[in-house]
Structures are given as C-alpha cells and as structure tokens.
Length: 340
Image (tube, rainbow, N blue to C red):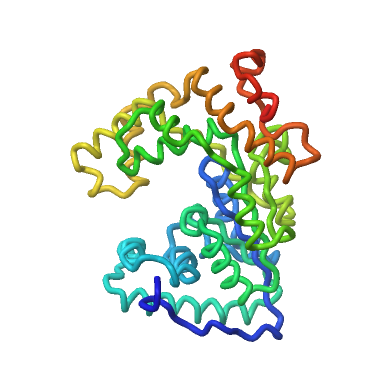
C-alpha cells in the first residue's frame, strides 16, 4: 500500500524466545470451515495445551483477523481495499487504518513476548486471495518470521471440478451473472503445481505442507483429524464440530443472482445472502455435467501429474475419480490416468 499505510518498525529483536506459528491457507470447500469450527469450539482447551487461535480465524469475523492480513500487506494493498475491509468495524479514514494496524502489531508483539512457548494457529481464506505474487508471499513470510520462531504453512487441494463448483457459488454470491457451464470454461485451468511452486520458493520447502482433500488421503477420512495430525494436536477430550450440509443448490443460486439483479445485495452481507437464499429451497445439486467434468479433468491432467511427481511422488494418484467417469477411461482420455 506504499507509504500511506506502512506502520511499525521493520527490524525486530530475534534473540528472545518466540512462539511458533501454523498458518492455514484456506481454500474454499477443503474443510476450512470445519477446521475453524473445531478450533473455535475448543479454543479454551487448546489454549491450555499451548495453542492460541481465538483472534485469527475467518469464521469468527473479528477485526484482528482482518488486521492480521492487512499488516503484512500494507506495502502493496490499495488503500481503498483496506478501507473496504475495515468499514464494517467502523473504520472510516486512512489515518484510522494506520492506527488500527499499529495498535494491532503492538498488541500482538506484547502477546507473543509474554507467550513464547505457545503455537499460534492462523486459519484464513483471505491469505490465498491477498498474497498471490512471489513478492507478496515473501512479504507475508518476512512479517511472520520477524515475530515467530518457526512458521509452518499448510494448504489443502481438492479435485478441480469440485473446487470450481464451489467457486461458482461464491462468484454468484459476489455478483457474477453467468451459468455454471460458462464459469467452468472461463476458469477451467487450475494449476495447483504453479501455486505450490510460488509458495515453496518464497517460504521454503521445509515450511510448506501440502495436503489433499480426498477420502483416499485424509487421516480418518476427516479434514479436522488430518489437520490435527499435521499440527500435533491431541484430540483426546476435544469436541468435534457437527457435520453440516452447507452446499448451495441450483434454486438458491438463482435466488442469489436475482438479489444482485434487483440491487438488493448491498443491504445484506455475503453470509446473510447465502442463508436467505436457502429459505426458498435448495433445488438440485450444483454440479457439472459428465462431459464438462471430463473436460476439466483433462485440461488439468498435465499440471496435476507434475504436481503429483513434484510434491506427492509416493502417491499413485492425487484425487479419487468421479464415480460417473471411473469406469469410462476412454471418455476421459489421459485425464484419469493422471488424476485418478
């Protein structure tokens, strides 16, 4: 954000003991909400076990979560974007943005100094969106490593057709007016290997843990259990979140699109739009046709195979194949050979 929003000293003492950090780069529909719910409902018991997460989860809509994302991004984020993100918390001017970031950093530094033995867990979908270029990722990593002794990143990946189906609903909720078929064609290429390479090159291979949101690879076929296994969290005595069907159906998608056309969405935040759309009934499941699903898998087959060879060489495949394509390898061509 250039000089307008920068605040706080760049250099920090590195001699004193510092806590560790686990940074969850949350992709949509990869168990992110379940992981955050687990961390939220168990936050007091986790604190007793040395894990702090209460102010750093998207799910709980706290200003500290937004400020956590804004602070390291202050060098490149557009001031108008920063104001938009903080407006709901009563922030109205650029000066107030600077003050909030400075106060947040000061409060965080004191907290970290007083809890050097803790592991802080940050889980956010915003990270994937806000930090995209190598320089931006490096800026985030430098900001974190100036405060934490050890920073480990974790990200989950889902088969591209399923990921795009969920992203389509998100796009409609944000005002996009197009069909699922058109959205799939427009966003067909989802190169996970390229994403992984950028993060690995800027945070270090030893600090990046990539995991697959797939029943064949998740610990106990559960995203929460898998995350806890990675983070070193003993789940004995902890409460697991209830499994909920939060998927949005075709009828609800039509309601969302109608709300945008009628200019009514400005009155409702994204979360309330989704809940309102469900009132009118879900309709059928939002999913690609068999033909388009095969096209998406085929388009990403080469990059997926490179992704597998580079980051999962011990796995025979990345993702379980769609049931309607599993017995039709000729229809999918080389796609299933690479991703199934």
